[in-house]
Image (cartoon, rainbow, N blue to C red):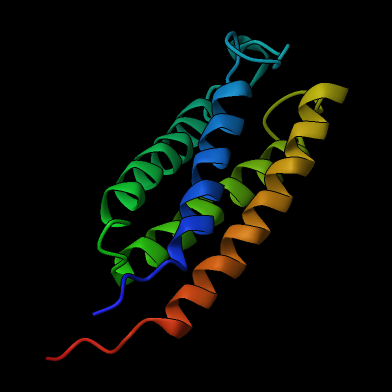
Length: 132
């Protein structure tokens, strides 16, 4: 059985997405807004989505060796959570609007998420059928 190489771009994009979110963490990366700038209810929402992204990336990378359908499914979840965070942050319903640096980073996250969605879809379409 030949080794499937389609998942490599997907894994690379997932790792790029994780790095983008590390760089955007308040107090750690380029984010200049503080936790206290946001509404109290926004913290758990951002935290939950961020944990979902990092856990999804770790799980997808762990399943990538076998290139199961789980890798692509987890990538879809990661991309959807990343887009949700960006849209939630851009809406400014929970805090101040994005400064220029995080705004540019949000645009990059949206592009990377779109590429993840495409690669995951492509990998799911080309995945061999598994016997029941």
